[in-house]
Image 1: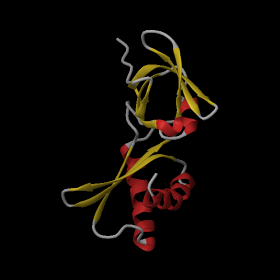
Image 2 (image 1 turned 180 degrees about the vertical axis):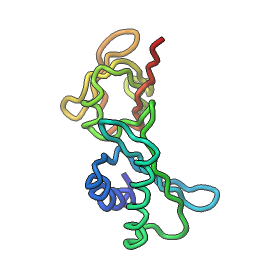
Image 3 (image 1 turned 120 degrees about the vertical axis):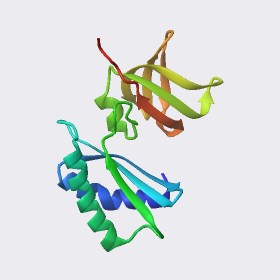
Length: 154
């Protein structure tokens, strides 16, 4: 995580948690009209538009006072969505049994993309029952991005 994202996370996480939400993820990206700060919030009962509005108001006020981002930026607050990113070790344990897609930075045995059923975390690694067979351990430090795969029931 970059220095600015670590600083933003340290600043915003207590605020978001005090409101009863989890700061599931945080992104700062360059856009066409400056930077975009995206907060993804979550809680057990789910996240509605009103929740995003409340968090946005509080976070916006805090950012105005602390002014941690240079230049113009936009703030977006949303739920993590059906294909949510798994960004923290606790996320991997929370979604045990769900299908995931994992992309590695450097790859493992010549492979960079993995998918299968999540088994959780063990010894700084994510354990996945791969599609097509076999359990694999993927080091947390080597994961570029991991996401839930949406499951639709008919």
